[in-house]
Image (cartoon, rainbow, N blue to C red; front, side, top):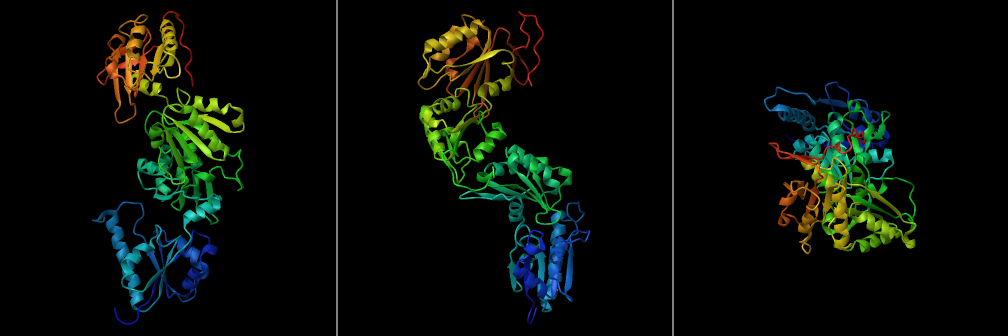
Length: 511
């Protein structure tokens, strides 16, 4: 290379509307000696069609045709090898013009360095020739604009993701961000939608196709037919602050609310999409410290963890924040209505000073169902739920209720069987129930179900070892009809739907 060379320009054209091409981009396109653009083998170039109003007579055109897009290849280096050879050939073609002193503009939809083909020319030529990149409006910005929904606000985090990621990996990223844009749809759309569903955020997401063009289409992500999704589309998860988008205005004291949610017994896979959506839009998250710690950190959200013995104080704190305009989520493990925060919040909310605060409760998977599912269906017939904690009610009341449940021949789910300071109630419960139940009554001890330390023990009422039971356990005590069936993969425990004393047909199954 000798003498004066041409100059290389990577020019962003924006998302598709020719009127969104910048003034600088339009000037450079009109003045260039050579216009280079990419297309698939069908030959139609979106980039050239957008730039067409700015082209001038006498310009040379370099049509860079991809050798393949999604199909297979017999190239010895596979798909990547074929593409590397293609980019090397394109760079050589452009270098010939530059060496001849011609200025070359490479057209790029959106922004040249945002998932754009131009970057492959830039990497190969920018160190050899004078080069400049002209930014363009990205498809992400265009999608937010056509939806009329803010991308992110205040300290929110926006994550841009390729739809080519595996659904489980993509779901994990979606769980841990405020807002997101997922690019490269087309054939990946079914997997992308699955990821949004796994993350519990499908109801928040939007689909945008060919934004700002005459072929523009928008729809809720859940309503889109996967067979009708082109490559030039994206999935958008807008700012959760603006999820229920409305005209801006000052907050009033009645704008705040308290939502009590159940996280399920363990990790994020136990959480319902409804609960995920509520957490994502919250300003403040309140709960027992270890439960709050299970939630991802978001810069715009405030976390308030506290001790597990201050439920009323926690509820009042949540309601006071809501009275100041905050969207508050109070978290419980399992289901919030089962020995958890829903009762505390609704009790405090019944006081006159909180009469104007909206309170709702969102259910979660409770520990009794989680433990039962690990062994079959021990709660398949009538059962009751009891707590052995005597912190808020005396042991005499607990004993009376255990006796009543035993006399009624109900299966029993026992929460809070023991703690560091309560170690004798399990043995006392066993002895009391043995007055009414067979020693061979099946018992299931579930510990940390869904967590890393999960264990399931199937034993009998007479063989319960109180030393095995701690505050992370839940007990299921069978009725007289509960059966344990040995199986190679572990015992199957179930309570039949038919109760022999009645001889009646089983009731229709609930929906």
